[in-house]
Length: 154
Image 1 (spheres, rainbow, N blue to C red):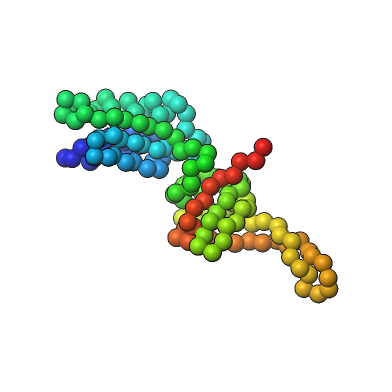
Image 2 (cartoon, rainbow, N blue to C red):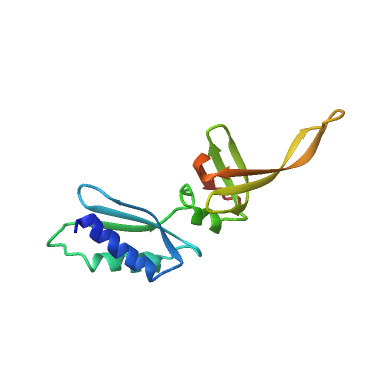
């Protein structure tokens, strides 16, 4: 079993014990620096990071492999990567970049295949002068999303 396979197995075991947490990214570089990025349905606490770190670190032998371990939560400005992140952020405003446009709008739905954004826009009236407010709704498949970030308003 390779070092990466062992770390991956230990990580999955730790996450199975904490079903509200999920893995965003695991990277192990050539010098055995392990970086684990987590997210959770109810957020990630410092204790969650400590518990996952200990579950990995205490089951690896430093005599066999010298390593560095970093376990962290996905930050506020970290782009969303998996469907479960979108689902937990329903109701929040996202800034979504596609190949053709950038949309900043509330996320109203998320499935395993796509997200739905809804917003109001001012557009020219179909008849006469001036503008009118119209409701917009757009479904975007995950494959079309280049980057999506939750926007924070103060």
